[in-house]
Image (tube, one colour):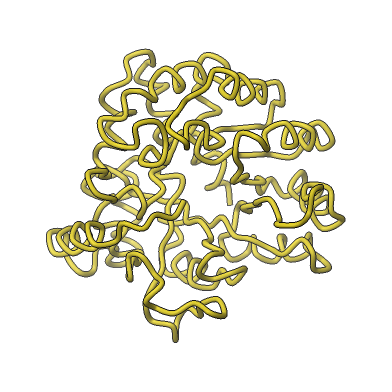
Length: 316
């Protein structure tokens, strides 16, 4: 989720890369070894981009000056993540900057296939969305972000979207829903229509984005547990509740989801670089799950920090 506070992020990123080195990822062999030993955790949601438009074209009307921060490359991401014990990351397509062009993310996967997987996007209003999904699987794309389409009331029932949900039931590439609480009933209806399709709800369904965590909205989110292939990302703490560390006001919602979904259907994620905003930071995000919550076993904590994301996105 975008934010406007870019100066502090640039400061943090500059310090992180300087501390860890300008080639954080190194060779694929070294990166892969670190992912499983010194850095066992998986960040299930982060964005990357580059100001080098020769490598990554921007949307019409966008310029490098619109990027905030101006640069957040794979190396800059891992400079922040690796010291926190994160060795693998799921990279998320950012349509604001790049539309449906996933090439920068798939290039990162090609260079470091043991470290990255990609959640891409395809245009459901164009023909052959299902074929595009299958083709992108070979490029490390193991999930697809979907968002409400402006001006389309039944955005989850277009022909292309229906084809995507049907294809995902076969390929196991989850439909990753970036939605608001008001959209949760229509997502539930789509899950009912497509009971075999894997689904991931990003950022708690953005419950608490206006600063208030309402029980009715948490109940709607929990109701999705009846659909056995739905999982939840417990992520984007900078944008929810009090929107600042230590993020303890989110613990009751996390506990409720844990009680309903179980640890094997929840996964932690940072939503970088937006988690690096003002006083928000990466250690506070992962630390809430790794060090603070006290209602999970060690095995369940590992599930939240690694295994759920591993099974959901690193299956191919």
